[in-house]
Image (cartoon, rainbow over all chains, first blue to last red):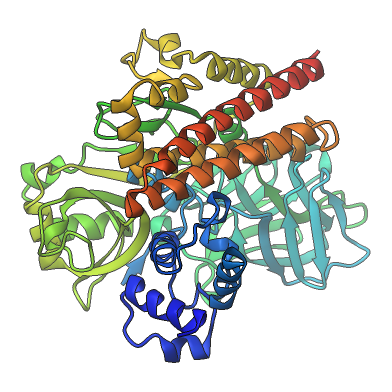
Length: 80
Length: 510
């Protein structure tokens, strides 16, 4: 499974929104998906466990990531 | 159905006692640069003169728009022309800002421009005063126009007409029904008339902002308290710390009439809303659909009632849900049950009612408050002859208190409200520094380091908030150590920032 598919799966898990894929196809914006600071931090913790990476403390603000892709891009930089 | 204005995104949300006043006072009639919008029956042309006192007045055909000029002193503004032998002027007031009890807009006739600073001395005045009544003045004798009162909504029509020596003022809440507001005879001289007719705008220079930005918001901490960190104000009673405010009247007594006079809650709510009074009421949220505790557990907390729907028998309330305000409509029966099931049947009334007190912007007072903050001084000691002295830890010492031992550290890590409030405090301080620059007490150039320091302190305090959220989710103890380092950084940046700010303000005051 690629990074994006896994992240979408984790978003579905932490946001408790069922069947989030069609929503993401319409809009990738985290704001449109109802991601707030609490949900985002839960996602960070799940991503860290899943990919064995650690978000920098300066990158924990959900407003720094506007889309699902921007989160995936950041995970990619951590995996390098 | 009636709904009062509320700001859906109040600035301070840590506790409801901060969020609700902001919902009430920071709405579209107290905020923004637009002061007045009106349309007149005449056309603004070369006959017209302006006595604007630097206010930004735009005239476009018949449309008058007045904007705030922050340098403008408390002066009345006038737009006028010569009175014709048979003249008539109508104004439709579409919008009027409301930040002072004497704010008013209206029409006047007078013999010269010499009385422009004092409407009560004018020959004829009809004006809309923000305290929700219309008034007319004829040679200093004023009349409150009754029957208009609290139900008055914009637009409002005012008219002055003369027929030679006879002059009469009118108002209308519906443009087709003019009601006389008084008349008189004047000594109109047809050949050499001195009389003028026009509009006056009396807006009182944002007293509220001077009051607000005089207050260098202080923080205090008591780790043993149910609300461990809070903003400290001088006045506090019954656990509420907003007893004095230039825009809002608070009252917490009149709920007693419910029991004493057998008035039911629904009627009480409706009559208050009809009089433009917001009602803060304790509800047991176990009985309030849409709130976190609904059908789960007892939780008695404040909600703000801002409207009702007679037909549907619903009450519109705002509550705080997961740190954010939400807006709910609840049936009157459920509302009553939630009220009766709440332990404390306490009701507070908020009324948007700006006072007439002039506030001076006090740089020396600000320097003193900043020094107090950096020294951890308890400001309630200055007024302990009339208020209870508070015992908490104040100002910069709050950081030391948090870092004092494992117990205090654990409270900080487990209660997110403390770090949330610390972040809001930095945001408030950023705004205060911006205000000093905006009002030209300081220049942006000389403040560049101060701005940089407060921005870093704000950014780091937000970082702490996120790290605590992460720690609570992940239980990774190594985060805690980094939190303490960042907290010490915030303290040092604040000390450096306010130290430089004090030096600069002191230099400029001299």
